[in-house]
Picture 1 (cartoon, rainbow, N blue to C red):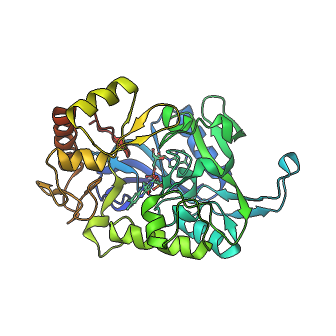
Picture 2 (tube, helix red, strand yellow):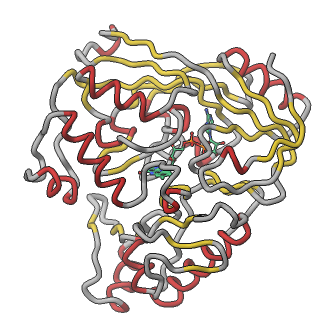
Length: 354
Ligand SMILES: Cc1cc2nc3c(=O)[nH]c(=O)nc-3n(C[C@H](O)[C@H](O)[C@H](O)COP(=O)(O)OP(=O)(O)OC[C@H]3O[C@@H](n4cnc5c(N)ncnc54)[C@H](O)[C@@H]3O)c2cc1C
């Protein structure tokens, strides 16, 4: 089994560059190792933090008083057919430690359609079901066929079908009950097609010069998404201080009819997406900007990205988690005061609360 190291600083393992030392740190290169490490820590009642690419984490300046397990498992297995669901889709089973964007690039090159709009999202495959990663009209809930998990309560390894994963907007059963399942591998069911799924996002359709619902060559969809993301500082780039973030810091609030009516009174004509279930999704970026927090707004050494209102950044790498959270609280409280809507953080906070 891999060595345990003491006092490893966590900041270099997160894209926000915050986080003090881990009491113990190790990495797992095989599924068996991953299960054995976590099972032993659970037996010893040692707190565990499962670490992927660290791109959706805000770790406390005090670090983590337990064992950090970095997922470093590798492997991609391609199955042409699945006898239980013989729909002609290719099934790709990917170990949790594989890089997500490298997988997307491969899918695009192979002619496997369904994840191309998720190009450029940082992090590892095992984290994609956790918050049902999504962008530009796609999310992984549309293509996940099964998730192989280690159930830390029962000690068993098994497969969860997509319907058992509780997928919703930036949410899942895994996020709802964080300590329960460790994701070991994910199986995606992808259409064999040189074309993207129907383009479902206005900004992407405009960039591609097509109507909503059109299908375009996979490589065109990937390139257009990457260009849009670069323009917003939403791809990892060492030279871009705006990319020192955890992506969007707040989710778009989803309001029930009464809350939506109350907001419409306070902000007539505000942008909104009416959802099929009667709820209303509000762009958090609009709320933030209209509450008085423009792009580039600073508090101490933390800053709202100069390219994208939803990303809180650590532009010099010197801000601590406490400074980032102070900015997040100021924004959240300012939006609530102006619009009566509470914003909710998207990244996972470790040893911190908003
Ligand atoms: C520049 C930038 C752009 C981004 N854009 C998007 C976007 O467009 N859409 C989007 O949805 N997200 C986006 N994100 C957020 C982030 O990239 C995703 O949430 C990603 O899936 C996180 O992966 P990770 O491996 O870095 O997870 P980590 O940050 O390492 O972990 C996130 C959480 O998942 C848990 N976890 C990790 N691996 C496992 C596992 N194998 N089993 C159980 N739990 C696990 C961790 O304990 C933690 O709670 C962006 C982030 C950045 C920095």
